[in-house]
Image 1 (cartoon, rainbow, N blue to C red):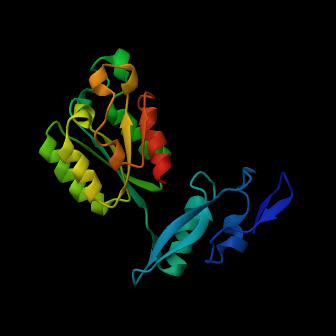
Image 2 (cartoon, rainbow, N blue to C red):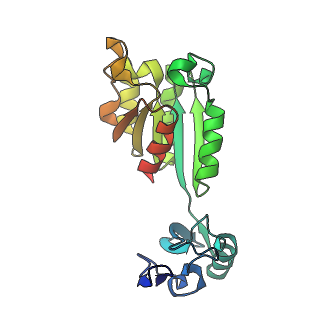
Length: 216
C-alpha cells in the first residue's frame, strides 16, 4: 500500500509483486512527497521480465532502496530505450535560422532529456544522408522501444524513409521544430506521418520531450 500523509488515504501499488509495495520502499519520501513510487521493468538472472515498484527516481529513498532490492532479488532494471533520429541540417540547430528553429543546440536538448529521464536510455543519431538514416531506422527500429524521428526536408520527399519506418516494430513519433503548416506549401505534407503514431510540430525542442513522454 502507498499512503499519502496529506490525504490520509492509501492505495495498492498497481502491478507490484515484489513485496516492496508494503515495505519502506512505498512509503512517502522523507520530504513528504505524496506518492513517490515508480513502476520499473526488471529482468532476473534467467532473463525473465517483470514489473515491480521502486521509489520514484526523484525520491530521497530511490538509490538506497533500488540497490538493496536489486541485490536481494538478483535482478537488474530493464531500461526503456528511446532513439532520437534527426535528418539533414538538424546538426545546425541553434545556429541555423534561430528565429525559426531556436537558439538551443541539439546537444543541449539531449543532455536535458537525459537528466530529466534518468530511467530511460536515450540514444541520438543525426545524418544528412538518406541512406544512413534508413540504416539507422532499420537497426534501432528493432533494438529500441521507440523512435523519435525528425527527418527534416526528407519528411516531404522520401518514400524510402517512409517504408523503412513501416518495416520496424518500434513505436514512432514524428517531430518538427517549426509549424510545417504555417510555412511553404511544399512543407505541409509529410510522407512519413502515416508510418508514425503521431506528429508534434511547432513547439521547438520541447517537441522532443513531449514525444518521449508519449512513448513511455
